Amino acid sequence: MTIPDRLILREIQAGDRVTGLSLGEKEAAPLKTFLRKCAKEFHRANVARTYVLVSEDGDPRVWGYITLMCSEIKLGNAHTLEDCEAANRYNDFPAVKIARLAVDQRIRGRGYGDALVQFAISISLHDIMPRIGCRFLVAESKAGALSFYTRIGFTVLDTEQNKQRKLPVVFIDLHKLH
Image (cartoon, rainbow, N blue to C red; front, side, top):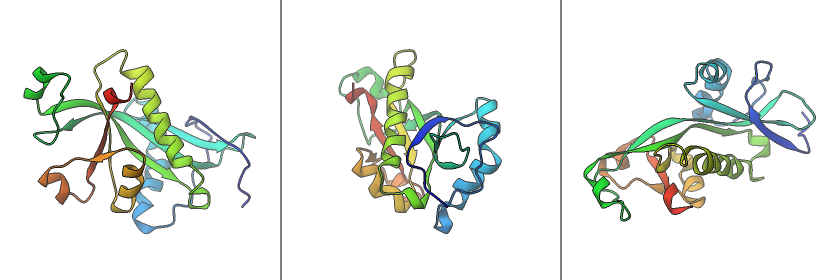
């Protein structure tokens, strides 16, 4: 299979080919299953939005994707909002969640994962935060992806419960980025 020269990011479409996505490791199988069985339906039903990396030449083969949805983060005592003390009496804060993130193993290491996260940050900062309350971008990280998330600026939620989770929550405080 030839890797395209240039990829673009766009919303998932009915004709997108998702069967050729090669994620390698067995623990990533649910990411491929979601894309194949649920992503388009979730997109149509406004449960989550999926954006896919496809060739600029119009080939509908998916090389990577990110799925975003509304969420919340339960900070507890792990983090306080220094700029809004009154909000610290709450445990839950509004967030955008990276529900799924995957890049074909044949193109990893070329910055596509970083670009997908930057896209999520951009949507959160420029489209969501100006219109509704939204403080954080969150994800639940597989063990193998923790170094990726921390390298690009996420913080692991520092609670005992989170440290024991199979998929620990990581977050970025969006308010500190704008």
